Amino acid sequence: MNNPSSQAERPASQDLKSLMLPELKQLIADMKEPEYRAGQIASWVFGKGVESIDQMTNLSKTLRTELHKHAHISQLHLTHQSKSRRSPTTKFLFELEDGQTVETVLIGGSQRNTICISTQVGCAIGCRFCASGLAGLVRNMTTSEIVDQVIQVRRIFGERRPINNVVIMGMGEPLANYNNVMQAVRIINASWGLGIGARKITLSTSGLVPKIYELAKEHLQFELSVSLHAADDKTRSLIVPINKRYPIKALMQACVDYVTTTNRIITFEYVLLQGVNDRFTDVKNLGALLRNMKYKLNIIPYNPVKGLPFETPNERRQTAFIEALHSAGIKVTVRRERGRDINAACGQLRLEREQATG
Ligand code: SF4
View 1 (cartoon, helix red, strand yellow):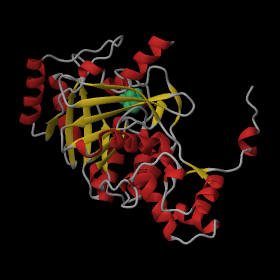
View 2 (cartoon, protein in one colour; view 1 turned 180 degrees about the vertical axis):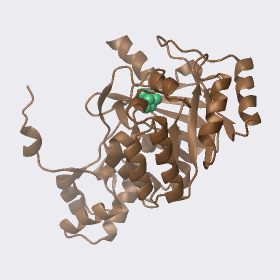
View 3 (cartoon, helix red, strand yellow; view 1 turned 180 degrees about the horizontal axis):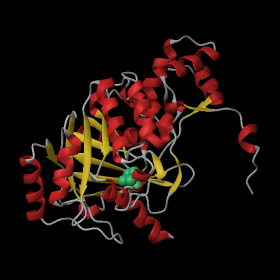
């Protein structure tokens, strides 16, 4: 049986992968060491991705021993990796220290690579077309677990596939784990951290309106992507249930506020589901909704999930929908399916593994 007090009795040990440079400096100051040591530690943890404090060979033995008393480095464990035969997509299943699993995907070629990372184990939002939401939310991921997905994949591929873009669109609703995610993106972005430019980092949300306002106030240069998927409340509530709490009008007001406050554009994601949101009335509604907005609309033909009742529109229907969007003056990009042969839709691999072992 778990002892509820065991957590409190354990000596406080900070996870170095979750600390910002000022926090590392504080840790070092508390140990009466010179400040430059914090930069050395950040370089070992984030730059070189070491697994142990003992690998920090430019720190004295005494400092390493002292550091062991106050800090540790957590690790994700790779349990599965599959490479698509049809596209340059690789999917990873990582085990967390409590045995939970999360998915990470690397998409791209030799020089331009985008990593898609998870922020929660499971998801409470329950979008009807998504495998991640099927079993609900298990827990938020920690800052270090979020950051470590990038460190681990970078370690696997090194310079062969450098990571240039980070999209926070894997399992979970990022803005529902706001503090841990914000700390993680700051570490991923920082020059002393993983050094990925703010405009190469995309945060996504299913539409948590209060958090969009909160994010706008941070005045950060990260990209924001909103999962729209429908332009009328009836359809959107059916496929993205959070719409019942934050309907389209409230969502769009928050988006306008974000664009005005940050002077950034928003990308609206639109998963194309046959017979659900690929009708000509949807084009008309989208045109009305996006008028006067600074936006980009990203159409994603659905990647089917076994057991879910949605289908991908055929090529002819996809083309007709996209041409109708163009004719209506809507700025649109299309993200073609990638990795269908390795279950690259969010949450699918984890679900399949759980069904196989459970
Ligand atoms: S699409 Fe995203 S927000 Fe919706 S259930 Fe899946 S993981 Fe959650």
